[in-house]
Amino acid sequence: KDEPVVGDYVRGAVAMARTPAPDSQGSQFFICLDDLTGRLDKAGGYVIFGQVVSGMEVVDAIAAMPNGGEPANQALDPVPMTKVTIAQP
Image (cartoon, one colour):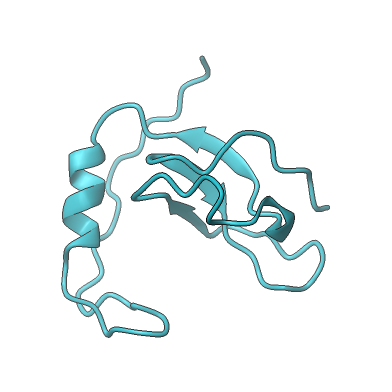
């Protein structure tokens, strides 16, 4: 089920990706590369569920890799995540 968006889309925020359809959030997510407060509509329902607290330089390096351009910016050589640590505050 869709949940209300709590927090702001700031640099390092981790949020659920979704389609325009209701209740469409799944296993995909995105990390904000910049502060998007006021530029990414909270009504879109991209629920924020985390924050990068270390390693943002790795996120920046992945984002700088070559991609296919607009509209999807799909990675030409995808970078797999081999280790992720999730911790509760």
